[in-house]
Length: 105
Figure 1 (tube, rainbow, N blue to C red):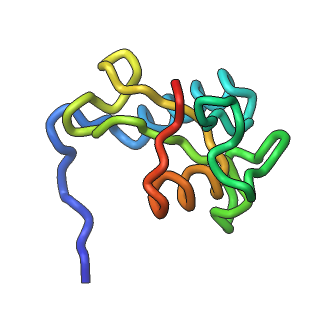
Figure 2 (tube, rainbow, N blue to C red):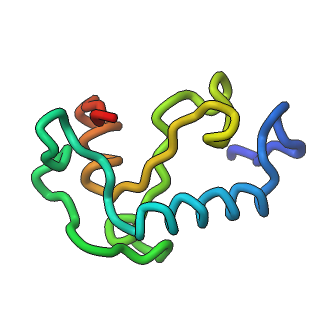
């Protein structure tokens, strides 16, 4: 059984701060997927169009907060140097994590 860490890691945001950062990025992108390739096309063919709900029970049907760089090295927020984008399940999980594709910024 994997136990949660009892304390925050150095530089890690509290759960309330993480939620505020997530809400800020969601508002900025309007709940839509921002993950595109060099030609402006979505990263995955099953890309979800339109506005996605901010959360839900099934990860395939809600908006994802995408960290483009390592949180431990580049920080947890854009102010600390990390690039945060909104994404759909197909572009974030299937294209980036499974197929290794990188979005064009």
